[in-house]
Structures are given as C-alpha cells and as structure tokens.
Image (cartoon, rainbow over all chains, first blue to last red; front, top):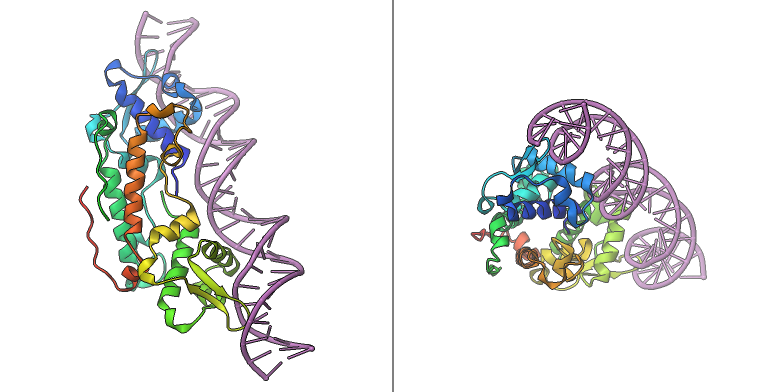
Length: 140
Length: 140
DNA sequence: CGAAACCCGATTATTTTTATCGGGATTTTG
DNA sequence: CAAAATCCCGATAAAAATAATCGGGTTTCG
C-alpha cells in the first residue's frame, strides 16, 4: 500500500509550484531540476492541467502555475488526479461489482474506510505543508 | 490508489474464517469457493500464516483457522501482511531516502498522513465487520 | 525568424501483480 | 499400511500497470 512515483512526482511538482507562486510560470526544466525524469513529469503535468490543478503558458518564458490558492488545493485532489480515486474494493465506488447484490455485508466497512481515508487526504492543503502546520492524529 | 486483489482476497479469506470460527479448520477449497483462484489464494494464506494471522492443520480434515479472536484482528494488520506497510513516500518509513537530509519540509506531512491512515485501518476489526458495527467518519 | 517552451500520441522498458505448475510433506481414515 | 485429503513451497509464466523515452508538432516571445 504505497504511493507510486506518479503521485510522489505530482506532489513534488505541486509543492514546488506553490513555493514559487510569485515568480511567474515555472518551466518544466526548472520543476524537474531535483532529478525527476523530465519527460515523464511532463506527462503528469499534462494530467494535472486537464484536472484543472495547474495552468500553463506556452512559448518562451512560459511554464506551469498553480490554478488557485495553495490553501485550497488538497493532497487528496492531487492524488485523485494522478492515481485515480481511493478505493479499497471495487464495490466501494461502484455497488454490485462483486455480484453479491446489495446485501454484501462488508461493503459498509469498505465504504467507511474509503471515506475516512479520503477525509484525511482532503484535510491537508499545499499551504499546510509550506507553513509547517502542526498536525494532530485523530484517535481511532 | 486502490487495493490490489491480493488485499481483497486476503480480507475475503479472513472474513470467511471469522464467520466459520466454530466449524473447525477450513480447507482452501472451501475458502476459495466464491470464485477466487485457488492456488493464488494458497500463496496468500501462506503469507498470512507467516504473519501469524492464521494457523493451519495439515492432512485430511485439515485447513486454515484464525489465530486469535476476530475482535483482535484488524483490517490494518491484514493489509500490512499482504500489501506491505502503508506509506505515502519512502521517507515516511525510512528517513533520508530522498537525499534531502532531515530538513525535508514535507516529511512531517507524509508521516502524519501515513499514521492517520494506519490509525483508521487499525480501528476496524473482523468482528466489527461481522457484527455490522455502526461507523462514524471523523471530521477532517 | 529562431529559440524557448508546452503539447501529444506512440512506443519501449521495467516492475509488479496475478496467477499456474509440479511436486513434496503431513495427517486422517479405512 | 495404503489411499485420500490437505497444506507447503519454490519456480515459472502470463498479464497488467508503471515508468520512461521518442519524435515531432504548436505556440509565443524577442
């Protein structure tokens, strides 16, 4: 149960963009400077753009910028864009896939777990990360 | 971000074993009866055994049984056994992998998210599932 | 115009997941 | 004891997902 590099790269890029918000559009080259594979990151940024998380300016002096304020962009949205929706079992998103009909005893649990995890991921924004916000783990 | 079939099969098997707790060891054949690939499930049950979650009896009339009470076996432990520890970035488990040293600004966040998710997964036991326990999502 | 940059579909390489195979070991039962 | 039931296990194969690369196209600035 770990994040693929897709998600890690995307988060990296988004944090980078949040940090350089004031500096105008950031070219791919610059974003990838910490050693990320440039062309692969380009794909991911394309996905992020199509999800409305970043905007782009083409041509010389162009690059990528955050769409909106870092305080409104959550880790959950970034991961959802790049890794697809969180789900613990198919039936958590799409009822009835398992063929057991609606009396699948465990569906409630998967749904609960999925929603809880989503709530946590939606609870952290880019500015929380930049500002080193103190966290508190919710008791189970 | 979805669970692989490994995790799903393992959970399925564990729930099955919890349901048939009173009926003695359950043979692989029976556990896989809902259409899971038998030999693949066998591998997974091996993993679960090595993790101390199930015990086995060999020979005729043998099979698999839960190790311990369903109320003490959490979804988190089952997933950890089959899918490895939850981690959002390598540095959440093993500091310093990213090469940024200890001042990696984002590590705190990954750690928080990882621990929160773990807390949720540890908060649900097999008996919660069987008994249809009511859940309440923690506000973010 | 030419350089800087994004855009994008296609392809390839690598890794992980999902199985399957074939035989071995253990235990009950007749 | 022999046969049947069952777990055990390393190896291999097939399929899918991930990660990365390629090659060319388009836009924009100076």
